[in-house]
Amino acid sequence: MPLTTIESYLPVSQEYISHWDQVNTALGSPMTLAGGYARADLISDRAAINTAINASATTTNAKQVSGGNVAAGRSQMVVHIKDFRQGVRAKVPSQGYVDALPLVPKSTVNRGAFLKTLRDMKTLWTQINADSTVPGFTPPLVLVSGFTLANFSTALTAFEALLVTDDNNDALARSDRKLRDALLKPMRVHLEQYRIAVPAALGLSHALTLSLPTLYPAPGSTPNPVNASGSWNATTSKADLVWSASDNPNIDHYSIRNAPAPYKAVDESVVADVAKTVLAYSTDFALPVPGASAEYRVYVVLTTSNQKGSNTVRVTRPV
Image 1: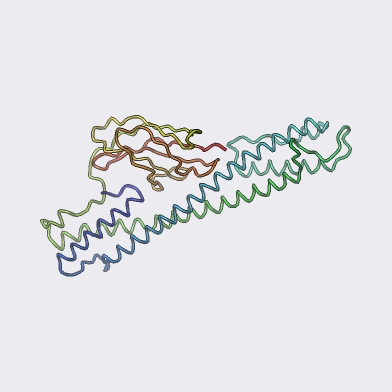
Image 2: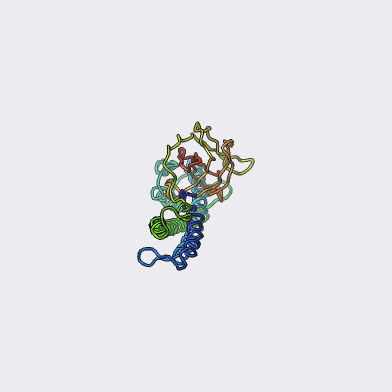
């Protein structure tokens, strides 16, 4: 099989390790590449990549969880903002305070602006509670269900902690992906060198030269991408992905993949491979908690291993 995704480095390198063992037997002594790179080094490099892939998967999952927690926390804080606006209008007959009410942030507003709204709200609430001069109002201001300024302060502190955790997880996930990716290029170089070294050592017509494992997809046409869409299924608690049928007669299968947002092909993980007759798939991959969002692509994979990804589909698990 050729190199296609990050995970493919493991089975591909294992094919080369097994092939290298046969070459060493045929030669009667260990074959080494430029710089003395030996089969044992490839085994060690493969193990390091495996460890790095697992580490990256762990920190990426942690980021997905914390991102979902932030989304859920953000939704709850919006509820508090709305309740505060309603409470001030209903209980504090002062046009000055009403005019000073924070606006409900749009869903697209960045974290800094969102936090500023929350902190401004806390400041205004504190001022209202300290003001006993408003006719018809006796402080403190208590919202629906007995929600107080102290409750809001606690909620704000907890939300800020969620943001710190998410930022830390994001940094760790990015770092682990970079560490993982730094190991991939050297392996590709060594496998390319191996494909040159074997025929040089055994001859172009030797059986082991003719049986060299593939490294990249064979030359061929790239298939047209399919059009994909997705939505959250509240009944199954999974994302339902659907896509149009490929028009390529050489299709082998479809590959559903996921990557952290913003979607980059170099960060893809294979969620599942499905038969070419299948045009739908349900999954909760990368959607571990309410509020989490995940991005997917559906790849058309040909019998030649040539492939093409669909549009990026984003699905959010509701809070």
